[in-house]
Length: 551
Image (cartoon, rainbow, N blue to C red; front, side, top):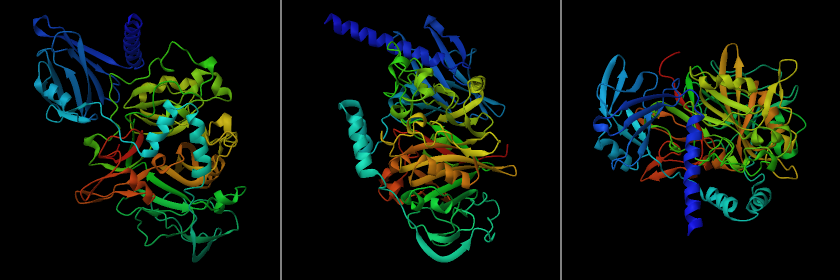
């Protein structure tokens, strides 16, 4: 009994220490305090990332006077709205927008208590100027549930998963296009890209480029049918600034095996002059504790995770898009690797920084430190999207980032001559941490992202590779003119999910890059409920919203 009590006390102390470590990691945080009347304690408002101005932590005395309660608040309009404590009216928030101010009572207040009891991921407060974020359970597929059970509860579970992937899932999603009658040669210059499109991919010099029929594509296009010219871009129907392309990698590069040469790659490009990029963590993934890949010398037994914590509390991860963004959202896609696969067991990065766990930031809040040497997709506070290998000296820029996600090492990077080249580790299984199997069988369903820049125009490109190695991904991205590229996730449709949301009046349409991705959505009667938008998900994701006004 005594041992059980001591264990419970130790666990409680570790949880409190973890929460303190999590808040301490937010180096830019600002704290306001106002004493409450009657000696009842104080209200504390912590602006976690002032530049992002999105998330606040409100601490109030518990109703019974014993201890405190903490509430994770979300600002519904960060560019225009400021939230502070009102010292002239203790127990109230002052919300200022466009020069007008309103007060919102939070103590003592039944509205806040009711919002906390509502079980809504985003419970509206203060005339919907704020949301209270409530803890919810994220949706997961049967495959996700099974793999998590094996990893967490079955000895040798990771080996079982690896066997299933290698024997049953390898090439399971490979799609081969049928040839269409039309033939276009790579050197004719015919069919120039339509106005506003990214540059066409470079085809293998001198090889004929037959048109293909991409029957497996689920997106509606401005051109009729599914006949596409490899490497050329076609507009997505109903979504100006979104472009779609397809190609068998063998039409773009040599040196690939027969399967990956023929297995179609689909690419979707987003004009960054028209859209903003955001990132949201899933309710569960990526986790914050240790990856089992970390070598013993890099693991500190007294820490629950590499950053000193393994839980996000007191913050809440909802795994879905905030309701205020629904009117502007035009696309979403799955984020990156789980924590289990997000550290190095081989190579130089395995021997530094606790194994170099992949880092991530949401709304300016650091959930896991960004590590040097890792490919990083980030969004700055002014909305600029960037992609680069993180450097130690970049730590001074953390306070200027709104979102960031790391995923291993670069697929495409800048070479010695200043031009894009394949990442230096794309053919090195262990050092590159490319997953696959221990015998380096790396060909599988994979997704990645890159940035294309031309004449001052920039595009974020999502790539879906129906069966590819990292080397094939790099060569395809290079052919499309990417200046930098990185991996996202792999092996299953739920890990490579992308959906577009064209609108017809007030109606939101849902189109999946590959039709099979629809099984990850839900239905309510005749209404399709898309993943990430309609219900919480256990996985992290990126989303694109139409820009409200030019920067």
